[in-house]
Length: 502
Ligand code: BES
Ligand code: MN
Ligand code: ZN
Image (cartoon, rainbow, N blue to C red; front, side, top):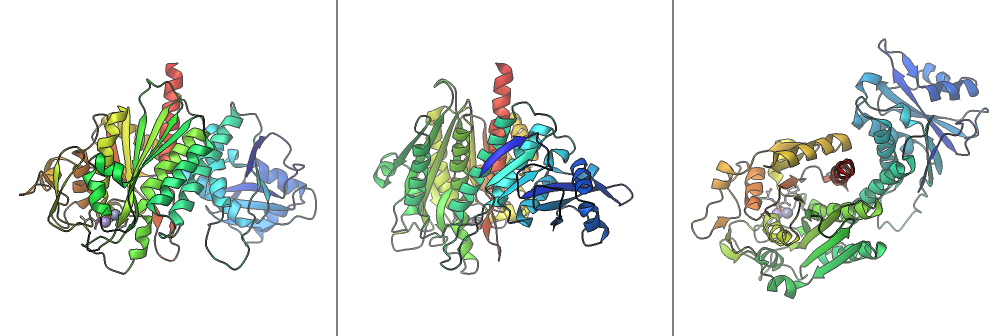
């Protein structure tokens, strides 16, 4: 999809669809934006007729398409409801853009979304976020359905502005890069688990490196190398599967070698059956999404390369399957981790922490500025926070604030959660340094985070539990690509801070 920012006249712009926003005023009456009034006047009242006819109320998320007879180069007007202007949140903004893109099959469209900047945000935010949302909404889900041709979708996107926004081309390109990364992450995560295997993830990482040969490098460790490094956690979890594990290291060089990198670690369990501590059959298919942390960190690295950020970023992915078999790790097995700690595996379904622990140990070799891991780690986190908010576990105040701020801006919510202390106490084992689970039904998200803390590098470290937010379950089963928005926003915030430092 091509993206352009334009100051040209809406009425004569060569596009198929023009979007116009309509607010609701304090009295509940429709309050058309400037573009809505302009288009309405040119088309002999096509916009207001649609509203006054009663078929369309300008409520948030609502949308109507009208085909005016004349007055407009475009064939249709997409009228977007925005609700009360004071109540226009980041989320409503994104939903409005998505609704507009979904409402039409037009191949080219102009957004007038710079007239709908949420309270507290600026034109730069609206431009970047609008492009990101339009890009994601325009991409149909990739499936293996053999009947019916896929739709072409949106090919050209314009964003209308009255006055040029400083650096508008770069800003729009950044929105596109984030949107593109989200589409990539969704695509990989939505694949069937017999397609998206550890090997496949490694190849996907390699292809990112090939896309950016000057700045991105990929190293993939095989089973032998993983074993040699002493990654006992990753080796133990993979033992139940016929497929060998992989350890992926994808790095982006955007700054001097001396510049400490942001290290991202993503959980890459391509299918989690639970191992010998087998999960119930119902809903087990959703455990193909247990590699969402991996697809997210690889996608973020791809976005960083595409945006040519002046930072160094490393993505680390330990990846394997968690299956039961005669060779699988058993409850009560004791394994040796890469950092020298022994772990008693009391439940083989608490596997994510075992593979992440070794990856966190490995991260130390990069002397990271910050380390952030992303994992669909615990059902307990869904119990605590639901499906809209990811758990943020971090004992560094600066990093917590930076991530919370990026989350707000990116509309990718997190909530700070506790760890360590009494939660860490739950992980005592009579037979080894640590047990891999705490007391059943007792703050499971916090004990999991506390387990990881024993392996985290010396840098400020944050753990994001995205078990509830990485995918939508049920009939609409799909990956959300979260927290790609949060992490790309976090990197962009660092970029700005870096620039002002000079
Ligand atoms: N991948 C699961 C966590 C999960 C559950 C993600 C539901 C998404 C939706 C993880 O490996 C797991 O099985 N965790 C166990 C831990 C328990 C055995 C301590 C859990 O949450 O039940
Ligand atoms: Mn599990
Ligand atoms: Zn898992």
